[in-house]
Image 1: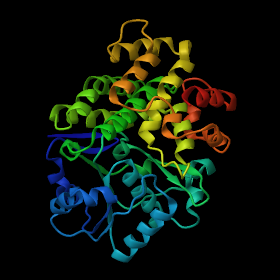
Image 2 (image 1 turned 90 degrees about the vertical axis):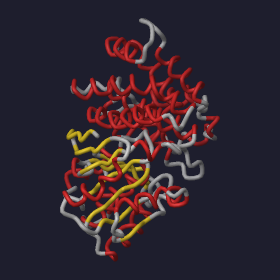
Image 3 (image 1 turned 90 degrees about the horizontal axis):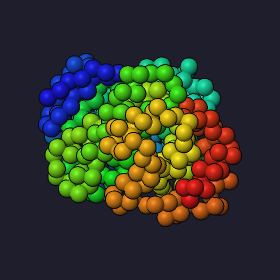
Length: 374
């Protein structure tokens, strides 16, 4: 079993969940509050976590919505305070982990929650949150090692919260927890990891170690994602996809790009309830096509990592991969229409990820990206 110290301590392998009590003890905490979602409560995975803990937790919040909201975080924070908890265990996909981070901010910071958001340069106000241990059950977001969280505020804005204080103090990555993921969710979360790796590599921010990790993660994803989708019980595929997810978040320490800018903007449309990883998968080929020859050396390295021939059309290769995985071919296939764009375009332009895109992106560029992906 590997124990890796890189941004945070990560215990990684099949059976790693059994190490959770030891990890919590090492952090000096005794009353963890568990944050998870209704699906994991219904399918029995929450029971496995509780069994691994041994002693009952201080409390459990199992109502995380698909897209974390300020209201849900406030409800969880109320439960945390009432339980007299001293730490947090985030159990689930990116939604549960992001909501746990938001809850941690609420129980440790005064004033309006929105003031801590990136759009208000709130990172400078973020201090320590309660000790947080993340236990992912999907292979995509990498939130277990990410300094960020994305939350829909009360006014409908999808805000990003970023600070080194939001990196969990420890992560438990157990591929066993992903064996039951259905094919489409495996595909969508896997392409989320792939997008993290590719956008991080293409970001112009200088960070060679993160770029190298992104290239390895992209190679791992292209080699193992289709196997994981085809056979969800393939243990090797599940191990490598969880590692690719972990690497994706390590890589995007150097930034993301317009795929995430547009994905975040469209993800705030309440009536559609769009899956973040699926959005990234659909948008990625069109973003790559727009980057074009602006990053030739990085395209060469990405082609090599993805096993493509020199000069191969990288955008088309990703589109073909999406098709083989059974993912939608367009935003319109996901229910997005022209009418949704006016309310989303400014959010895309102002998104934090836009600042580190491979090429500068303004309103006109986003108009083009939206039209291509639609």
